[in-house]
Length: 372
Ligand SMILES: Nc1nc2c(ncn2[C@@H]2O[C@H](COP(=O)(O)OP(=O)(O)OP(=O)(O)O)[C@@H](O)[C@H]2O)c(=O)[nH]1
Image (cartoon, rainbow, N blue to C red; front, side, top):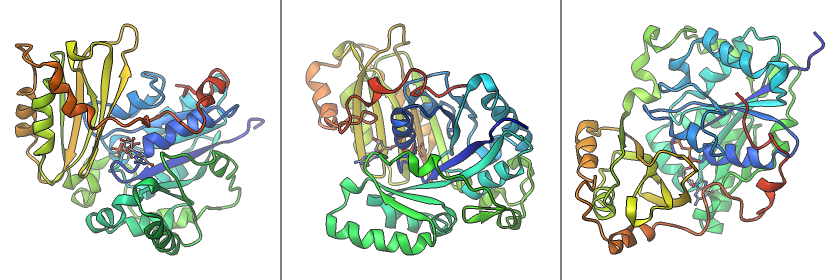
């Protein structure tokens, strides 16, 4: 065949665990290794695709919810075909699964792929250390995901006390079986942990062809799944909201403060208009955790707010109506109203690596940008 097979790594983890953050770290720290990123979003607006290294359009975005439902094997092969063309010059492909996708299903799809230029490169499961028990209660299948993973990244360790962390690590290590477990903050892991993983034998990591077959599900999209109701995302609703009118910070904060329990994840970008004309505010909420991260608008970037809200038992129409009410049509907001938002801005940026400020600049051209 002459060409080396490109490993395809599946990056999985529940909502808000830090998958996109980790993917950005990999892209920035890859030095020399060329990574192709496939981002799969849940929700009508592809927030993750936009936040991966800020490269809108440079990722292959699958859209339309969980990967196992959005595409069948033939469609996945189309994306992989694009990424494995010699001109893309990729060394590794990382598929970031939506926080609601079933990782074993994704692995099965890759194993079933007929593309001769790829091979399965392992399953990475990102776990939110601070939300571990809560996630496990909501999704008992987390244990199964840990057992299937080749590498478990116990992320957000900065949000857990050291003694608690030691205990948590022991618990997760026991559940991960033979898979490696590495603690991390902001997804900072050594890329070598992933890219040197070159399983050559029939058994790929801890998940073999047979394991995958045992899942015994059809290879087509969700419409054909008899047990669709059993899919993770079936229990979730999402609302997407886009507006070109700046939001009123106080009204938005009132909405966020009073967000319903089931509204587990909010992500996107907020425009506060004349209150801060130079910046767009990235918004992340995971459970009760809330963070805003301002960044300068890109030249020519359209000024607008785009949000995706994901939760169980939420009323998407009511939430959208509430967000409509945050639009500051009459330009009533004053500077002081922005203070309530600034309380949730941290010095530590979402995607920047404070330990390695030169990482982005030092990366060879092209290495920090996923190729489509
Ligand atoms: N404190 C802390 N926050 C983190 C860490 N890693 C990620 N975050 C924050 O957690 C939030 C969610 O991170 P993402 O990378 O978007 O998570 P995700 O898994 O891609 O989210 P979904 O796509 O919704 O499933 C963001 O605000 C991140 O900045 C960490 O190690 N510590």
